[in-house]
Image 1: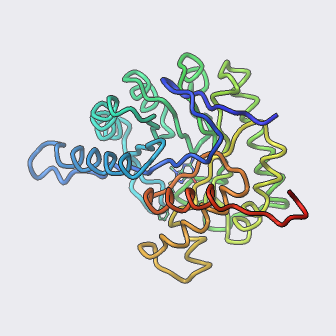
Image 2: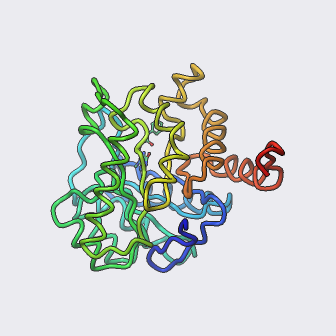
Length: 283
Ligand code: 8Y4
């Protein structure tokens, strides 16, 4: 039986349709006015627009994981994201914190964040125990290597087996630590230490991964390079490709789709739900 609900903090989300997670990046302030008002206000305004567009979850991050991005000290990351979380806690939408630093997770959990989206799958010191003491959901993601260097020369003998094996192992660790299974999402981590062929193999294997793994899946391909590899488009022209990929992920049975373009993705998923057809041989 596949899971019908995902428990995360204040919410129990029904999994009878794919959920849309909207991306909110909190960018650093220029400090020209000595304060943090501008970046907080911009992130909160963007988040509220995504809610109006139909986002089911907001994923709030204060550290860029793109190759070449500068390291963000943990207090700086906390100072960026906490005011945004606090401003949005009354908006009625589950809030996710995108971080791999346990200190940032702790600060976000203390103010009531509903989900921890960790690209390091709670491998950080104390992260598993920290989450075990809260009711927040967790997303455990696979990556190979570290964001700075992971795209140099990723190597797998069987990418689907290795990613699935890792996710199964992190799921078991989380459960043993006391995080209940209903709170866990798994994510193959598209683009994180994977070349185009690796990403393609993983994407095409989503239905079998879903059948074999013990938790619902989250997928993030929005605007990523794999879509540039396919279409030849620059990052700011990858919305249609991102919507197409989101639709395919939904068809495969993915539970949560992490996207920049919420309005367009929600429209596409509504069309899918209304008009989805299959060959009559399947029924
Ligand atoms: C353009 C825009 C090009 C964004 C690249 C990117 C995932 C994630 C990221 C993911 C989960 C990104 C935080 C990378 N990707 N979390 N985070 N799954 N769970 N790159 O696939 O968006 S950041």
